[in-house]
Image (cartoon, rainbow, N blue to C red; front, side, top):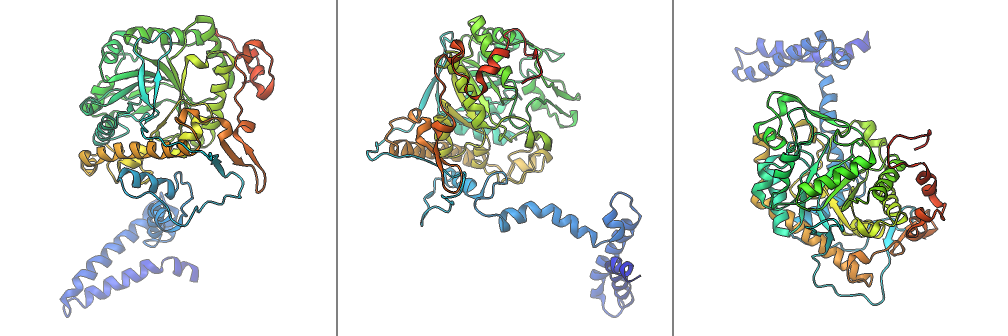
Amino acid sequence: MLSRLLRYSTFVACAVLACLSIVFLPWAPWLWVPAIVFVGLVAVGIHDMLQTRHAILRNYPILGHVRYLFELIRPEIRQYLLESDFDEEPFSREDRNIVYQRAKNVEDKRPFGTKMAVYDGGYQWLTHSIRPKKIENTDFRVTIGGPDCTKPYEASIYNISAMSFGALSANAILALNKGAKMGGFAHDTGEGGISRYHKEGGGDLIYEIGTGYFGCRTLDGRFDPEKFRETASLDQVKMIEIKLSQGAKPGQGGILPAAKITPEIAEARGVPMGVDCHSPDGHSAFTTPIELMEFIARLRDLSGGKPVGFKLCIGHRREFMCIVKAMLKTGITPDFIVVDGKEGGTGAAPLEFANHMGMPLVEGLTFVHNALRGAGLRDRIRIGASGKLIHAFDIAKALALGADWANSARGFMFSIGCIQAQSCHTNHCPTGVATQDPWRQRALVVSDKAVRVANFHRNTLKALGDMTGAAGLTHPSGFLPWHLMMRENDRDMVTGEEVYPYMPEGFLLREDDERFGYMKRWRRASAESFEPFDDGV
């Protein structure tokens, strides 16, 4: 009985206070305020006891709402009051702060030494030289375009990764693209097509083509070569990227409900209003490795010779070997490959996919790099890397492990004001970055945030230049695995060369190196099909 009284005590107290406020109202007119409040709370309590969806509210009327309030503000309480500088949820406060500081062009130095536990397992560092170099120009570039490309692109080694208009707001897209133009680097469109805001920004674009073929599709959702030719011929479009998979949710497409499709989204994607917009799980333009190579050659021809490549998160390693064998068999090679680590996270994904599908960037990058070396193709194909690469050490590490350039999505989101509220999929982004609500996105002032995008890029490359010079190098492309040191446990340390070595050139063709399982998968790969002929992957 006492337990029941305690469960309903808040409701009873509100009822008593409501009655007392009404009774004494003639003698104290100011009591109409608490009377309204307590009567309202009693009404809430009655509703709580009668509703059938929430057991907590039925047992604890009124009081149960406190639980839902704390659930609502839990991320903010944790982020602002409880987490340390190094808790990655998914980005640590230290990582976010360095982006904010560099974007605002303010002091980004730290006094009193590192806060990192340098003797704990997992700590990593770069080796430096007794004779450091002074690097004046940190606008580091890489030429992307293989032997069949007639319009190679001189890309920055740090660019904006794929984020679609529709996932990001109009003001966010415009700020990112204007910032890219100011800083002279590229902006990947994401699979949502090229919007009017990309065009208004005027910055260099990497046109991403996903399974929905947005911006180059027929009415039934298949690839339309003429629409592609028209889009790819834009001067802003510098490269074309076929999206095979993404780190956030590899192997899964998606649906944009008709209710969320605005006229601007419909225009960018080439889809009708009032109809759900589907992104299938896989491509319809090709089904085999050889057909993928032929599709790449076709896009290169339709685009007038611009660089064409593909992006993927590594899954079955044998399937990537199938693609490599198709390159050898057809003589067609992509101009670039972007390896997306499963750390990627701008796309909202089911929890199981976000946590347990796809290969992390380090392993995926080293596998792709070594597979191309083993087939004798590495010098024809550039490799980009994406997946939580937001400061100079991240970029240097990716370059050391085999990448030619790095992309970042959330890093540039932070630069335009993202606070990691993790409400991107709710349309309630508090900073106007990931929402289509016009009142919310008006908080993002394009003229201010575009400058911050350019600042973040410039200052990050400046820091990369400083690290490069400290290592005795003149360009970040000189980083190699032995520049990277890692602590395996609380005592032992290893070099990157020991853990992630560069495999010998042509070893797959010679079949003379059985390390790390490359040859096992190479022998089971076929250029004609992605399907396995046994049970392995």
